[in-house]
Length: 155
Image (cartoon, rainbow, N blue to C red; front, side, top):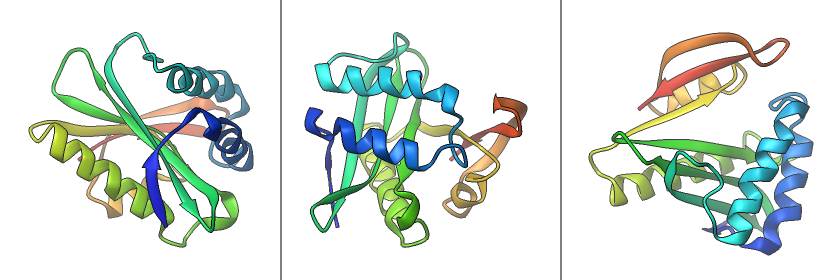
């Protein structure tokens, strides 16, 4: 397993990961936001106006991209926000997501040792993050779509 920095040629593979996890883990309405993120990464520009820095990674296994995920640093505050993490649907529960999450946590702790790490996810992925030391700070019903609540978490 290789974890490396996202490159523009990874765009299609990341789109396929998103599609493979829709509608179970992502609502179809989230695709334009994900595309905005990827376009920013492709062009070397910040995808989100509120960010100061953005980082995105892919996981290769057997010469195929099987996961992607990153984080950004808002312009204000002392926190890092995890974003757009996903693993190929047929590769869930194989330790790939955990490896990518731990890689991102290590990058944040190295670059921004005093920062809290935050994320938002659904009720479907919340237990995974709890196992890695995140705790729930807020729940918003039907935030992502009907039946897909938003769980805000911090580590």
